[in-house]
Image (cartoon, rainbow, N blue to C red; front, side, top):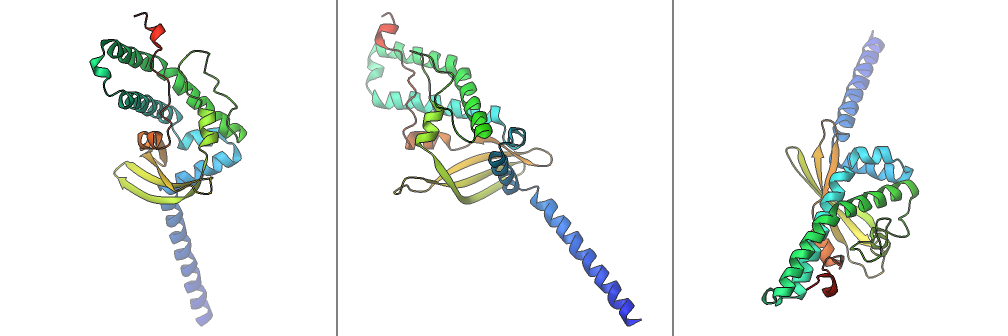
Length: 224
């Protein structure tokens, strides 16, 4: 009789442990951290389909290009504080803004191609596939090679409703490199979290001198 009771208690204990484990796993798979782990595994296994489930490449690439172009225009204005007094340079600025708007789609395509190439091949492209001689461009492959960094942990996760901001602590491969934070904006997708945007791209673009996109036309190109 006693042995039967012990066996029943043991079965109940196993059932409680199993339910707790299932609930814990269910909760874990619905966290931003779990999605980040899936992204890391997708990159390691070169699984583009899985990567694109957890990273909205279109949204992320277009957001990055918008920030890149804005940072480049801001950097140009900072280097030319008196340009507002020069009518010719004012016209040049307007042309630069027009050029920026025109090349954004091409730059976004180049960014997406570079990212997919990296996931598929485990390395960046040797040169920017979208750049042409004499046209404004940004070599994404070169940038990744020169500014490569390794993941050093999650600094923070801040979630409010269906939006989560996750800070990834990164460390450059140079011996004297200081850690920096890459913040990702993630959205709840009815079952998992998906990266939608690189939130602090503008800050890091300027910090690492990546705002070198040549958007200002040469004087001879303005026909003035």
